[in-house]
Image (tube, rainbow, N blue to C red; front, side, top):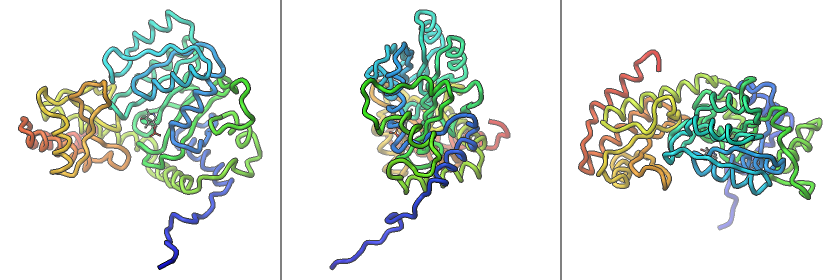
Length: 371
Ligand SMILES: *Cc1c(COP(=O)(O)O)cnc(C)c1O
């Protein structure tokens, strides 16, 4: 039999240039990023990060790069490949936030033109101390470059005058949006830190400067390249959702989820992975008791309760588990089921856990007026 398989995802309605222009403006306004250029990048956030690194790297100079996960390591490699002199530093404990003293010592020892770091890490559930890091960068007249893909919408991201010069965000985490489109936010100082690689062809898909030339600096009558229409409609819905809820409320919802997940995990007798001030709003990490088989716990949580419990990347403490509360799951329901499933799964594998105490702690934390 032949025929046509219709789907609402096929032949989507066009997304026009004026909507595309307005979308960037709306997103900037929703995030409090007025005064910056909001550059929509076709491709997931890793593409935007590589594009930033390619042109920041091409500008040369010395860059202090903080790696608290694989993204930071990659960013340093891209910068170096572009031609910058890169010093990458990492926390003493793999997967932990960077220590401010380490950054201070690096600045004291070297004269850096830029500081690059990841704000929040979904893989380990940590947040780096962005306010202090940006203050250090300013004091040393270094341009700041921040990967805020896993923090936008989940942690306060101040994009005011003291904010970072180049910020990359992705809609697919706290914002609950599409993964195949991302956004770079640049101040004038940020743009000034970009350069075309020597001998670069006249067009690259990894070039913010090309997007500026072909879109930002034009009359914006035609979207450059082929518009990725489905993702643009999804980003439009995502921006509308932020406009409706409000960015501050969205952050509060994630902070509340994180605080209640933490309360539940502590009531289970687990050790928190980081202190509350450095804990992500997307996921909450804790260490299983020594001797409890992590893989068996994660399997039991999925098999018996249908709940995904996260682990941590190789090289990070192999007792680390993560309760996931990202985007729509930044909710009482998801936290209670995550903590409950973890408690149940620890019991299934023969460990000691009190689901009643853990649930009561989550319920009590949500009743609190303040986080
Ligand atoms: C998720 C994430 C990204 C983007 O990765 P994708 O492949 O687009 O999902 C970049 N940086 C950080 C810190 C992230 O958590």
